[in-house]
Image (tube, rainbow, N blue to C red; front, side):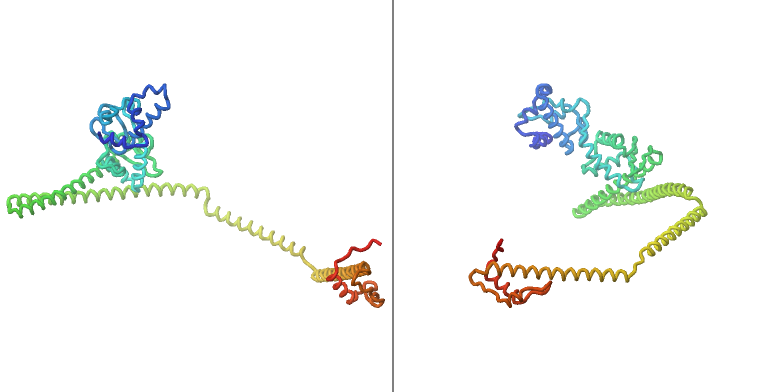
Length: 417
């Protein structure tokens, strides 16, 4: 079983064992007899093939890994062949005869590449050669090795045509920055890309020489241990030669990096100058609208004058309000005294009314209980004491008798006679 088929059969959500006979059969006839089943099988194959391509398990006919496209042909069918179910007979309904671009994979890769490459602040740093672009994309996507030429071409087309974040030609790729208008690739862009590519190549040579020097040093040490003088001398001579070459490469790389830094500095200065020039034009237009200094002074003087008028009018209104709000304190005091006297008289009248009502209640209660048990007939003196003359005060003894009767006897409704 191939790695591709093993990966696909491990997708238990889509490739359940109960569905395998249908998925590997020739289900093209279901397009008319069972459209829902046909669409479900096609979508299942597309989904798992996209995942397999993303994992780097699908190869082109030339043997290169394909992550962004599929090609229908014998190599793919051979990798999908199962001993139990054979080859998928309806795969040509899933993958067109021509190259089939895996949109989900290319969209995901494009988002990652845009985020990484557009984050570079330097405009020069966003100019790359095609090999450099391929290596940096592979690093950004976490791909071991490099992108195939087919995948690289698909990705560039998508980023340039659909996303419009870069322009490219046969040798050079230029990526736009945030809110930057992309211009066609110029001769200067190609020179910068070539310089960066050369620096990248020399850096690779330096790493290779460093590895070779370490290996030759170890070889000479082993020769010394075995007392092989000839082999030890040869290893040491080769090590000296590699060290000399390494020194030259390091010097060359240092010079190229210095040139690159100057170009990057000049590019940043040019960008700054362009921004300052644009800002100067904006300020010039705004100052033209504002006018000269005399116009500004006239406007400010007029503003101060109008503000003074507003303050004068406000002061006049304030004074008028104060005059209309003058209050005679004596009249206010007299009105307050009258209100207090009126309140006192009302309280006294209410007290007299309450007293008369209590006396009337005592008299009625006494008459209603005259024949009852425990009744005490008041004497003439008591009756005279409980009477009032005009609005006089009640006799205290009568009030006490009322309290005693209220506590010992239940009130009896007055007689109608």
